[in-house]
Length: 279
Image 1 (cartoon, rainbow, N blue to C red):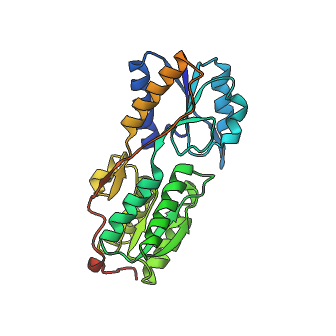
Image 2 (cartoon, one colour):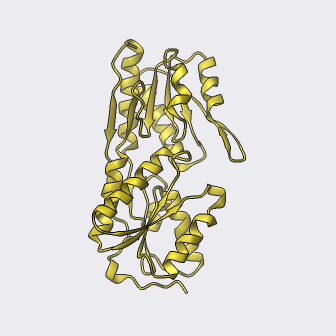
Image 3 (cartoon, rainbow, N blue to C red):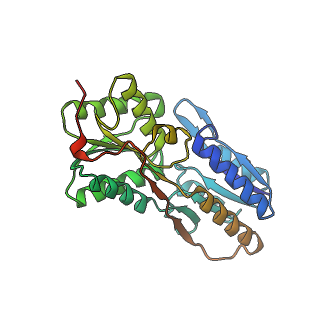
């Protein structure tokens, strides 16, 4: 039996990821039991969820959360094999099968630059909220700046305070300072698109918008320009590595990354098509 520490089963991404991990675990001959952290206000208690899995006596644990710190799990590394799945992992003693967020940020930035945008807003998620989103956003910023693009950075607020993110972005649009807004996750981009729709702003006529993950079903309906994360490939490889480690726990630590695919959609237009529209 192997445990899965899952950050937020209610989200479309984590729900789909869970289903893929369940399928791959069965295909590799072991049972999967999931645990999610208890959420109280802004406090997400991931350590308690991890400790619940350990008390269950699982033979291994998949860490599928973007915010738990390597230092939080160091004391357990000698107790049970752990594999970090889907998120960037820099700890030398934790095996990781993750998305290549550096490359993902570069891919999205390159496509924005190729559409002629020279003034771009990037919404940056703090590392303590999501290491995956943070790595993507930082890669976007570096790539854009290296291409000579003027970058305006807006710090992402908690989901319950979405207007704290949207308002400064709208101010940039009103002042004519950006022609494209890049988000490190589709759900953040779709929230912004929804607000623009309610405010009578057409996408991409008023502003181009991009996201990352390609999992949320609505991205196809909206035609969001995004990057489809290789969820299936990461889940399959993680299950394969876990199965091998259950047979031989003394295998060396490895860090592997997989790259997703750009999905052009309809929300990324060429910069000369920009008409503004925020009054």
